[in-house]
Amino acid sequence: MTASPLRIAHLINPRAAGDPACLACAALMHHAPSWSVHQCILAMHVDDAPRAECLGLPTNIYIAPRATAPLSRQRQLARIWRDTGATPDILIAWPGTPIPAPSQHIITLSANRLDAGPWPVDTAAIAAHNRDQVRAAWGIPTNARVLLSIAEPAAACDAWIASYLGGVLTFGASPICVVLPAGAAHVDRALRFVERHYHHWSVIIDDAPLPRLLAGADAALHAPTHDRATVRAAGLAWAAAQALPVVAQASSAIDAGATHLSLANIVPPGNRRVLAHAMSSALNTAQTSDRASLAQKVRVERDPSRFAARAHEHLALLAGSTALPLGAA
Image (tube, rainbow, N blue to C red; front, side, top):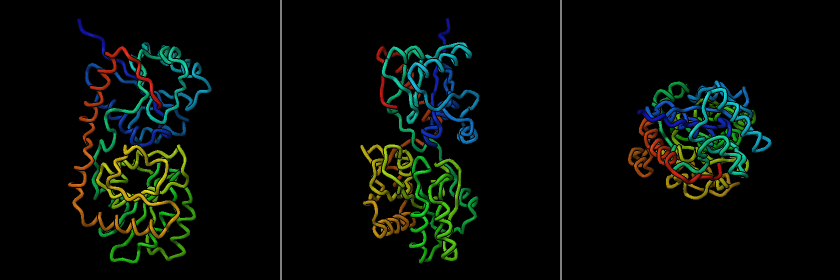
């Protein structure tokens, strides 16, 4: 008699979780072993669907991004299980996805197991991208040095400070290009600043997933517009996973060592001179160091299929466990 497949449901908010989590979730679904069946529930507004599709997530099932009460969320999920015909064995609440759980009883009405804690498998850099293709799409000179501003959510990126650094560093042998994620703050001010200085350096706004942007960069800047708990550090882990030199202003996003910041320069906030000096050093490092040897220091898996295999090992163990691992999403 053949055992029934393990049913796994993913609850994820694309905007809150960020590109790394979305790509990791997509990898799990696209490389699922035969003994598992995956379902994705997006906690989002309908306007977020194009971005979710770009990141490889199915968008046919979605619910409101926030529930007013645990019972409300449980009813939403129960309705989905009724329509699809089965209750999942494991409900995965991905990081950044609010899942109110003051009562274990209410949550277990939605699934047999809940996994809402930190993943034991590193989700960083599950896919490599072609550097030359990315830079060609930007239309920049081959000798350009690219400064990428990173923060999650993208609205926490300070476009003006990135543009300012581009101007400070532009007086060298190679042209400077500043790349900003779509949705960054103060973009109009950054573009006016470049125009006022006769476009001696360039600013590009790109809505591609973060790993693709990182592939074309020479150094990354993490200087969020505010120091709040809503600023996440996943982008820092991805940058380090690709052996990209990082300059990061001290903020609440840098903690616990989980961001692999052995490759980063951490500077105090508010000091532009120190920030510019650190970024100059980072760009020089990008030109002179062996990126492959730096990548070995991080030890993360870039192959989506191998990442998925390791993650499914964790899910199989979870399904056979008698404990209910509850944690902070």
